[in-house]
Amino acid sequence: MNADTKKFNMVHELGHLLCAKELGYEAVLDYVSKKNFSTEVTIDIRKSDLKTLEDYAVIFLGGRAAEELVYDLNSPGFLFSDHKKLYNVMKIIYELQNKEFIYLNATEMKRPAYADYYDKSKQILLDFGGKQVLEAIATSMIDEFFSDKSKKSDNKK
Image (spheres, rainbow, N blue to C red):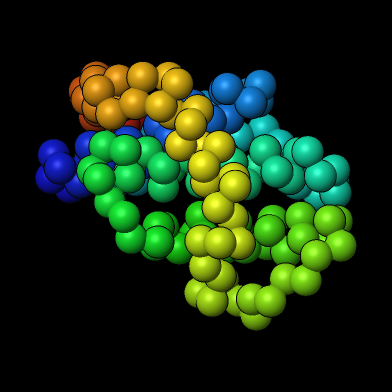
């Protein structure tokens, strides 16, 4: 994985992490492999509590909002795994709000369905310091993840 891809992935995951922390959830950026990062957010989505589900939507969208802030991306797409999870959460949110959810699957769901939650994610990241802070943290975390974790995994072989 080249340096640009590492940074892009780290910025995305950092967006999830910072939104989760701001909303009061425990979140850990966990090293998975040299090719992948993931955040683990402690939220029980089986519970149909509207506030929790709305928070979860904000957390999922935090990765996309971070990408937009740092890389100035205006496309509506983001990681399909995040989008699929967001789709399932949005279906429940709409149901709890007694609103019609017109999308049949994740690929059909468009930004208007989640715009309020996206805007909240983006504002959290802007309040945190926006592009400059996200880039600085991502850069320092890449060094930590790829040097320390690589050495640890090499020692286990």
